[in-house]
Length: 207
Image 1: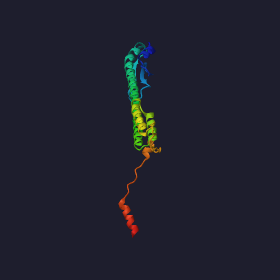
Image 2 (image 1 turned 90 degrees about the vertical axis):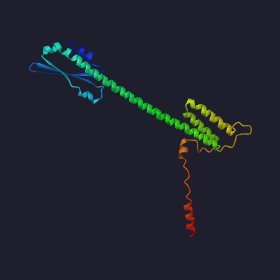
Image 3 (image 1 turned 90 degrees about the horizontal axis):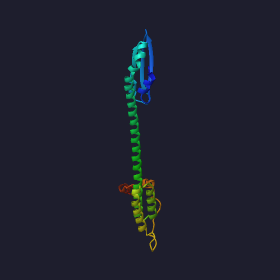
């Protein structure tokens, strides 16, 4: 009986085989329960032992042949389940990585667009040094494809400011108050004036 040679052939990767032996009135019952610790699905617990009964002589003669094919099929199923779970986990990990990549790209793009908008706003307000600072901040998060846009914007700022001009640069109103995205978000619009309320206050004072 080449029991262990047969088990080695039919057991799949990560599979186990629990063997129980019982004897009653000269008849032996041998149970073989395949398992696989790599499988997390509780469905594997539904697998029942393969029980073979017979006299010791009968088992010596035919036990190995009787268990080989059923055990091979069961352990094959367990190996497939383990492979499926592993593939599902890998797909989940890749999906999470893709979500994180998209979130990071969204944040980067928002920062890039934000700094470009700040640079253009500062340029419009004749805050040339502040505008150039925003361009440099945009370069830190820009892709290679976006650098030419920043080069063009930087040239526009320098030309408008008169940097290197014969009669000197234009008046620069930079104040450093609008060069970061945090500052830009922190700006609040002035509350509207309620003229009716002011008129009522004036009338109360006159009385």
